[in-house]
Image 1 (spheres, one colour):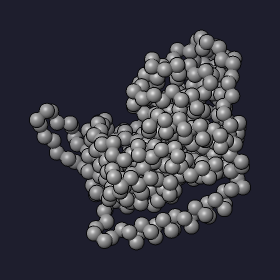
Image 2 (cartoon, helix red, strand yellow):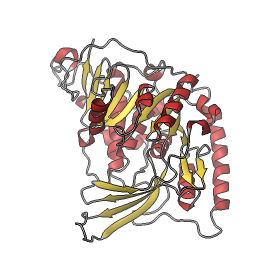
Image 3 (spheres, one colour):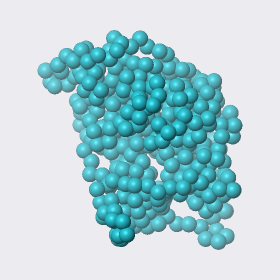
Image 4 (cartoon, helix red, strand yellow):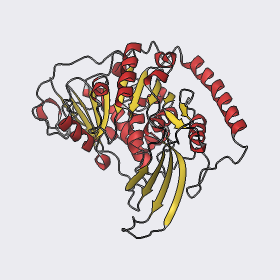
Length: 418
């Protein structure tokens, strides 16, 4: 689990008592402000102008020969080279993106929750009872999780969303600031409670969730400081009001920032068409990909004008582009808690891709070979996340490389279409 708050697995995150916490919070914010000033001073020359633009359309064929799982070899299914490695795979990929000169600055917009994670051996039957083996409280919410992951991997993060004017909201903001994320744009809605999500995890690592919406969609696009957005290299959107997502994506495009969107499990139930079309990169799981293909004119399996990273759970992931795909089966793991694994994947993918001007210098590249390292890093981060209690885990490049082991590129499967 994350060691960020110093609590053990069986502990509940400490909460401020009456009259406590305010001074600590002010001191935390002041310390964070000094740190951000240092970040900006050190990274401003390296980040460049951040003008990603919009991904350009590529000429794509009808995808013949692609079985829908990214398992075809390059050049029409040619067999691998004599050593068993696909000939289009970079045999010596740069697995040290933390050494890159560019430090990406990302605005992550969407839900900020307070999570109560409960581990049980098994879920009870109706009218039944089961023993709680472990209970942990921590920050959560997809936007907040990705923001923390990006900071862990050396990036700079601003989180934009909303919390209630209650103790859970104060705890969520304090945890974000302690992690190095800028929470200064977060709206505090005193009229609503903070969204609290109860995550129940069984002995096999599977989970169910109970949640209230609370204040997590009180924010709007108008509340985000435009100077903050203009200073960002990238905007990452997670589940939120469709009109808010569309307006933020449009504003980011006008500011020259690239955009990604992880709409979440409600993707087929909400009118996200405008935000989907305004995004350079989509993150979905296989069920969400099928739902999108059935309900909208966006087919994640055969995208016409964007990059789509499809998370396949214990089968890894595939990245689809108009010019082909790259897939990786993931890494062996004994899951403890799968909460937040998709957010960790997105953080790892973006942390690797945004550091490479060849990938994002003029919008996101449509060459699938450019995503060999991002998919490896994303899968490694997702695997690390499943070994931790709660939706947050400590990501680092050392942990990513340890998870990868030796020669992870030999499992990559790449199809390139003309």
